[in-house]
Length: 107
Length: 467
Image (tube, rainbow over all chains, first blue to last red):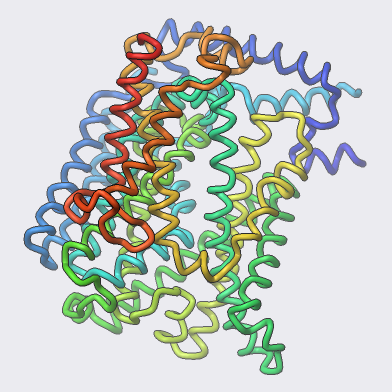
């Protein structure tokens, strides 16, 4: 009964004594570090690496907002204001499309 | 101990502390942006939008909100990729820069900061509840309907409910926030409808800011500083989520868009509403704009939605506490440590000084982000970031990142002295120039702190540790 309640709570750690916990923890850590070592050797990351276009796209979005921010300091207007709002969302849509087209490479 | 219990302990260990492997990741590109948007659209977004709208007109408030939040997030987005690469938690890789003990001290600094965020969400619940209950219960005692102590009492009740939901575990927390997060979006939808259909966008743009500073420059830069403060505030939160991203690209873009431009939809419409109403407290807007009936509905939805924000905040704090001290009982991680002490901040003085919180305390999280950024890209990158031995060392509190007694002096000197520079350029209590007498409003204090902390950390690492 207690175990079931704890399972729902998602917390079993405290039911283990220190030795059991440390053993499980260390064994799992080593197992995972070994897998990580192989993955890092083969592809340099546990997941698919970030392509260069993705960094460039983020920098472009930031640059867009910086330019419009500086523009607003000198000459605030409704058009620039709305352009920053709508423009950044358009850039997001383009990035999502790029991610699901260019981004579909091998892992 | 039964085999089943051991298996469950193993599962807990995997999801709580150890590196998350590629096949275990759960957030794709769009999922991740959506998740972070849902997390971002909360009391902190409403309040920063409100502050911005009070001091700047719409033509400045919109670009400032977008620029401030996004620029604060920008450098941290690059280091989020590293958390995704190794599947490691924020406060684990923090040990590389701050030292193995220093990483734990950073966690100890961040937990009280998280109490601040809890306080804003809880007090907003309190404000909603004390204004809402007299509509249904006219004979309510004055101590429950007045700001002091009514809002504080209601805030404590909200935190107790949120702590209970978090204590019940991740499944309760997930379902609770699945219900409450859309409520925040419904309220936002109501504000958008009001601005476009009732007030008219051109009419909003024609209005001046209700409470500007003496000069345009002061209003502009103070608003930018508050938004930068919120943007940099996420510096402590990237790793907890990025370790669950399915690709590095998702880790890079997800929180930047979700906590940046997409979350800013909320900030922007709150700024526009503040311009129309001239009120700081979002709970005042609903009755002012919608009358008694719509106002009551707005207050009810907003109150419930804020409890969801508190659940997310408590849960986000409870997990790193378990990572740092894995055998701690869940009730202590989620209630005793992550939630209860926040109660001391449930005061009007805290609530009405959100701008001070974003800037004065914001100096800490800005310096932290700058140091992690510089550490990863100036010192770890040329060594191929982290080796397996580095990761093992951080988990086992070994000698590699021990520096001086477990603390990296370069990082801690940069972190602590950033306050001296910040207060020199900008006085967060007044919103004017600091004791240097020069800088603000032509230099942003937080951007200067970011540059200063990163540069000093680089220099001291070269001088002290010959990196």
